[in-house]
Length: 475
Image (cartoon, rainbow, N blue to C red; front, side, top):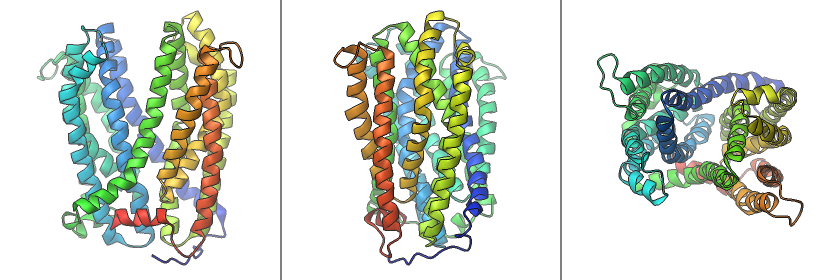
């Protein structure tokens, strides 16, 4: 595992990494937006039916969305691992990584689906969900349970394909999927085109067809596209699928999965606390959080593309390309976030009115968006630094740093500022956003220090333990 770093042919030209970075990030950003749109379609179409249907879909999503996020994180390690192998021109090893990713996606999705099927109704009763929501929400999740293995396969194929720099394939499939989801929802909810009328369960049945269909389409692309076809040439079916090999794969993906899940759960906990303040408070918070997620879509896609390039650089020994990739990613992301922050500050009221006309909600959301204007650039930097570390084969550090920052700093500070007068007068929902900002700022500093340490190791001839972890996943 000794590697002598050498400069690539374009290492002295920082601008040379910009075209591949932009070409990689564009389809990833569009794919991310398309996947988000698929969930938005359910909410909009359910809301246009009646309040009960909207509540049912929202209640079901509270269970299956965290499972999807966990599955996505568990499989995301496929991208930097394959990137490292391709950077070393070890194309035969790529087949083993892909095979383990597909197996984990299928079996992991099946396990999560089984939990959805058997545990949803007991969990709803345990948490005191309104009785009128439980039957339809459970029916919806029974269908979603069947969709989870297909979702796992889709995500595994997605990360394999994106690691090969042909993410546009995923983009085309994801965009077609959104269009198909709209038609399938309408057909299966109402019983059009000879299909049964399943009511609320139709949203789940449409998801079954969607995810399995997209998985099959991506599988077909791996047989046909020249960049990915070698997976099958090198006998994907003959890969090492022993428990030891799967265990190494999971050890790399589990910190990422827990990291993504922790970020989701921290916002869920914050939302629960804010909900105790009333409908206006939680409404303004949800609008603000949704706007923030939309604004982060482009920088996140850019950072995911950077992960692919970074994972290839040390793999091929071209450590001199790491600096330009990271500099361009941070520079573009920060510049974009500043432009968005200025535009948001100028047009905050019209943006909020896209969501609601309630004067109280608008007034509070305007205050919260003032924090978003400040926090946006910090969030972009934190996201980028976390993806840089994952690309360098260090998924554990972002998980531990963000876990500590959010649960040990954001939550306590947010609680104190929201509910107590220990520091200042109670700030209400603003206190929670101040707490999130504080935790994120601390996380940025710690992630930056960790990245500096990892880059100094990347310049050494002997690989670090984190790089050995990536190599272990690929073996």
